[in-house]
Image 1 (cartoon, rainbow, N blue to C red):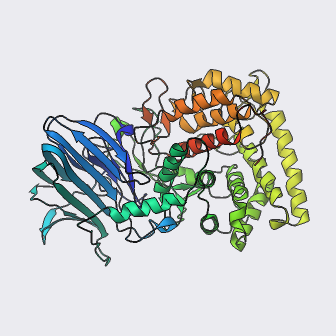
Image 2 (image 1 turned 90 degrees about the horizontal axis):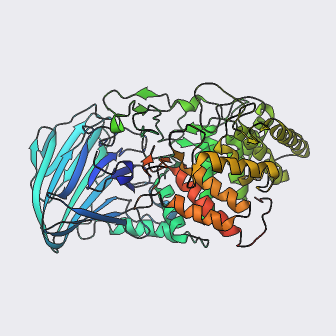
Image 3 (image 1 turned 90 degrees about the vertical axis):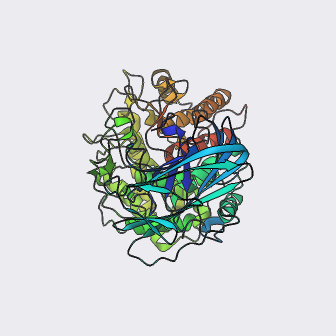
Length: 599
């Protein structure tokens, strides 16, 4: 990997997949069929995992940015000989606009090299590796295009100059002068299915894609604080959305480590119901909730009838449930941090807060769910009934512990949220006897949390009943309205988390966590706002938001000492947290007295 690590990458997306491009112009990650499909470039996880780079031959300096309101990335290389730009994008389908973008994307990666000044020597290296580095394809010329086929996957590269092919790598050296433009097109297709080839507009290869992204952005009229940050973060969340179903993946990658050299590496290219719900809420904040009914319909379809069984917590992007984990032995892992996994065993877990996340999102988006589809109503009612039946059970918790189930505080609070929001729906969701059952269970949960969640010796609400370990998930209590942030015990908990788990506002989940967990840092910002410390919260927000890379992208975690981003990237949870904190800073006016949160 090039210097700069995880945060050196920019995100490209087309509504079904994502590619990552680093500052040196190397495509180090792409799974073209869909987010959770096998890769064709995975140099991110092994130097031999496949790549496609285009860059100057000598030393260079870099500046880069997205074209406004798009995920089209423009990198400018400055060299002694002159300047050249490299513009990268995954194409959207022609003519797609607004919320229709991404549903039928052609699977085409376009790279445009343009000379800005001088004459710059350039080098290209194209070396695909299929199925996470397991397969090396022959590179074969057909009708002037370079074709690589490996089993079910075929890539076709069109280049404006001759390429030298040696084994499994194609290379070229060329110069770019001021005003010159060279366009490279890499198209994916499934080998054994007839798919019409996509014709790229030679005069303006990216024009339609730029127009598509901007039409989506034009639908979203956020009026709060930090509007540019919120618009950019909402765009990233859209980039992590599998448009055909509406599923939102937790991140674009697998197995990027929480700690270098560690083994806490997981595949995040799936749709967690918690992340999905939080993303819906974030898009509500960013003023783009119009597809709520369709997206909740997808959840209802994916979950199906539970018949009393625990609610599944995660799915593949088209609703697949079996995500059994398997180790990829062919890849060494990012910075030699193995293992590399495909799949995620968390799909088998019980996480009791998930119904609360879904019901809370439904309540916030209630105006967009009217009239409510029958299957959505049945799902929400079933979630409330499941919560009544199961809230006393232990679970794996929000952090997905793999050792043993416990009575996690945040899980119980999530159960309270489920029943609180179900009751707010009233007769839209339940009959009078349903509402009475939900109300009784809600009050019992509240009493239990207040009694068993508090640790008098620690002087705080702790991560699990009977535990003496502080946990940043306790910050959710005022955010969801369980307790006001000014409650004496809640305020003490917030203070201790900040003192013991935070460094400069970057909050670890627990003592000993290898790095700060980005969304927890934004939760602390929200809690400070709700406690009446708005100015300090704003300063903390700006510090935490500042750990994003130069393109505004956030990983799952960040080393509070070095600022290095760690974990899968970009991480939906982190971008959701930023939007939520910006909204909190917007909705609580300066000088306002702290109040109990309303939802």
